[in-house]
Each structure stands twice: as C-alpha cells, then as structure tokens.
Length: 384
Length: 85
Image 1 (cartoon, rainbow over the protein chains, first blue to last red):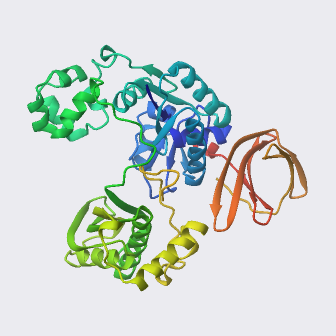
Image 2 (cartoon, rainbow over the protein chains, first blue to last red; image 1 turned 90 degrees about the vertical axis):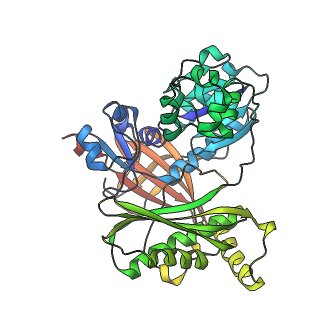
C-alpha cells in the first residue's frame, strides 16, 4: 500500500507552533509585510474566507482581525527535511513537495504506521498532518485530501472514492475539470465509466492513465529519485515598483542567475526562455522564444530575456518579474560550451554548494536587492 | 513585530547530541526558559545557525547560536497582538 502524507496548512502551522500566541487564531503567512500575497493561512483564517493568492488588504477585508506573519523559509525547509527523515524510516519515500510525500509501506499495517508518523510529528514539531492510504499514488493523494485537517482515510476500495468530485483528483486542473463537467462528468465514478476515446479527446493519453490509476489498475511506484523538472523558473516581487531600464536589467539578471544555477544543479540545458512581467496594477504579460542553442548560462539567459523585452513597449511600472527556461535536455546530449566557460561556472557553483547561493555573485548585483524567494512547490530537501 | 539585537549569555544542556538552552542573561536580567516552542537550523555561508523559539515569563524570544564561532544572538519577538485592537 501507498501512504500520502500532507502537512496541514504547513507554514501557518509551523508559525502557530513556534509562537503560542498565534495558536487557534487566524493567521496568514506572506512573503513580506506590504507588497506580497498570502502564501498560506491557518484553518482559522480559511474559515473566514482567506485564500492563498489574496493580497493583504483583500484578506483583511474578509477577516479584519487576521494576523500577518512574515514567512521564514529557512524554518520551513529545516522542518521539512526533518519530517522527510521520519518518513524514510517507514519505507521508500518520494518527496512530492515541501509538505507532501508518498511512502511505499509494502504489506505493513497502514493504521499503525500512520498513527506512529502522526504522533512523532506532533511530538517533535507540534503540528498535524493528514494521511491517505491507497493502492497507488493517485488514490492515496485523493484519500489524504478528503479528511483534512489531522485526517486519516483508507481508500481500499473503489466505492470509497467513487462519489468524490472530479476536480479533487491530482492531475485534473481547472481547465480539464471545466471541460469534463460540460460532458456531465462530475464524480470519479462518472470519469471511470466514460468511454476512453472521450477521456482521450479531453485530456489526451493522460486521461486514460488517470482512469486506470483511479481504478487501482496502474501501479505508480514510489520513486525516491525525483524526475527531472520540465521547467526551471524564478520570480520576484520587487521591493518597490521599478521603471528604469537599469533596474529592470538588474532584476532580470538576478533571476537569470538563479535559474541558470538551478539548471546546472539538475545538469540540464534549456532552449526556450520566457519572461513574465506584472505591472503595479496586477496586469501582466508573458513573452517567450525558442532558440536553436541550449543554455544554462546566466549571461545567455539574461541576454535572451532582454531581447524578448526589447520588442515590448512597457506602459507602467513593474511589480513582479519572472524568468523561466523550458524545453530542457540533459547535459550528456549536449556539448555547447567552451572548456573555459564551463570551468568558471563550475567554480562558482561549487562555492555556492558549499557556502550557500549568496556566497558569490556578479558585481552588478552587489548590494542591490536582498531577495529571499519563497519556497516553490517543487522544492525538495536536496534541490535548489 | 519588533526586533532588538544584543549580545546574550546563554546556559545550555548538551545531551544526546542535542543542545537545550535553560536560561539566558540579557540587558542585565536573567531569564529562565519555561519552554522551547520550536527549533530549526539554517546554513549561512560557512556557519550552521541553530535557532530556538523560547518562552520566558510569557514572552517569546528567539535565540540563535552560530556554531562556527559559538556566538549567541537574541531577538525579542513582540507578537502581533495590536492587530486585535
């Protein structure tokens, strides 16, 4: 059997556990005090309608006594690493995100293991988690989400999941869910009873895989080695809106540097560069271009991002920027750098791996931005 | 949230590879630690920093130990009670 463990309102729970004054109170965790959105909130705040992605004034409107807590990502990362170590004692573990993991427990008793994990996490960190059990990862994840917070649900037969809404299935996003509802597919039972050619038309081959998974006919083994990412991106809400070309260049360079470093950590190169710009009024646009040559060099990614932006007439000051690289390929398939360049980048990366990302940077970025990006959903203890 | 950074003297118990602060002296006052509410750690350059959220006399403090030079630091956490007024 597979266990899926999902920490309940992870960042908010860690803050409530650290500070007893915050217990049982509506709190929201944000990236900064003013220019940020709600990253997560406690269940007490969710009760009032506070949602992830709201700006602070919006959240305060629905919950006037909401307490804003500035995120401490080191605290969450440190906690996550320790929690994942607990999971590994019980079976092969796949870290799914900063606050979620799958464990293959074989033929062991799921209730005994779930109780042990819950009590150990509660004792060490004072926080709770929800655990789902199923034949495969899709069913286990569905089960953990069905009984939150501090839940435990064993989906050992199809009858236990058949009436669940289709949009609760991992892998069915808003767009697919809307399309399925148009075809009167509202529940998991509706989904698996639909002809395969219909599911294929709506969701491609993924639709058929999902049907097999929900019926428990797709094994989905727990994989302790993470699959290579399909894209690497970094975004930054700027400390203040920027308008000058110098500031824009510097911010893009900072993002390119981080993206390039992460690509090299994964040993990947990419050829499509995307730039997302959000204006101060929250309007935004995305531009991208596929290049012939692959890269994982910050200067190259920066130059490509600037080239994209040069074709655009900016109309308002910028609040947020994001740089992404997609269409990735592993290093062994490519050989595009000169030895000199590769050595220099390897030297920079080895310093960063040993002493942290900020141990070395480019002169253009010194003393400009002190930016701590939030943990992305793709964060893993051994990733960057 | 307010922050005051001062040097601090901390008494700790080392047991089973774990560091547990028991009291600290700060601003000429001695504070007994009633509870450690949270522990975490962070890598900063060559230093490993250990953090402890502690309660003393109903107040929350954050103690931090730089394991590179064994220097302690303190932050007095004033919680966001004003948000309730």
